[in-house]
Amino acid sequence: MKKILPLFLLALLACSCSMARFARGPESRDIEGLTGYDGIIRTVTYPSSEPGLSERRMVVYLPKEYERDTLRRYPVMYLLHGARGNEKTWIDSANVFHCIDTLRRQGRAADFILVMPNMNNYRGDRDYRNGRAIPATRAFFTVNGEVERYFLHDVVERVDSLFRTVADKSGRAIAGMSCGALQTIYLSANHPDTFDYIGLFSPYAYPTGAARYHRDVYGGLRWKLKRQFADPPAFYGIYIGKADFFYPHMRLFSRRLVANHYPHRLIINTGGHEWYNWSDFLESFCQEAFR
Image (cartoon, rainbow, N blue to C red; front, side, top):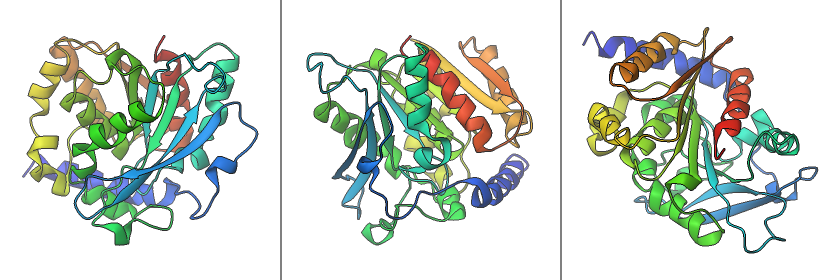
C-alpha cells in the first residue's frame, strides 16, 4: 500500500497537468495538405487487431528524397504522444516537421521516416472518432496494454510493408512523452530485438490503475530489462526536467539501471512536465538516433 499511494498521487497530479497542457489536435484537418515542409506527409489508416476496434490511423513523414531515390531504404522513428493526445499532437504542439527539417538542413540528424501512431486505449469504434482523442483521466487510468500488445503487428509490420524501411533493430527508434514514455519503456523491453534507439521524455516507469493487471505487457520489468540489456540498445536516453513531478522517480530509476550496469544516459533539463521540454528532448534525441 505504501508503494502504491505515492504512484497514485503522482498519477492524479499528472492528469491534472495533462488536462491543461496536453494539446489534442484539431478535430478536422487535412494533414496531407500541410505545406511549407521539406518532407512528404502521409496518413495511413490501417486495420486494428484490438477487439472491438476496426481501424487506427498514423501520420508518416517521409524524407524529401524518398520518392526520387527509389532504391534507398530508411530507418524509422516511432514517436508516441501522451495522455489525451493523438496522432496529430506532436504536429500541433511541437511543430515536429519543422524541427526535423531544421536538423537535417544543418546536418545534425540522419534521414529517417517519422511515424506518429495513435496510442490511446479505446473501448471500440464508438470512441474512435472526432480527432481520435480521449479525456486525460481516462487515457491515464485505462491503460490496459491493448495497443502495446498489437503494436508490432499493427504498426511496425504495417510500416515495413508500406514503405522502404531498414527492417531490423538497427533501423528502428522509439520515443514518447509522459504516458507515451511509459509505453516506450515497455514496448522496447517486451521486444528487445526490435528497437535500437529509445527516448523517454518525462517518463514514469511503473504503471498505475488497470495497467497493473495486464502482466503480459506491464509485468516483470526487472527481468525484461535484464533481457533487453543483455544485448544493449545503441542508445537509451531518459530525459527529464528538474521541476517535473516525475524527476525523483526517474533519478531512482536511473540509479537502478546504473546498479545493474545497464548503459543509458540521464539528460536533465530545467522546467517541468511541459511542451517546452518535450520539444527540446525530441531535438536532442533526433541527433542521437541512427548516427
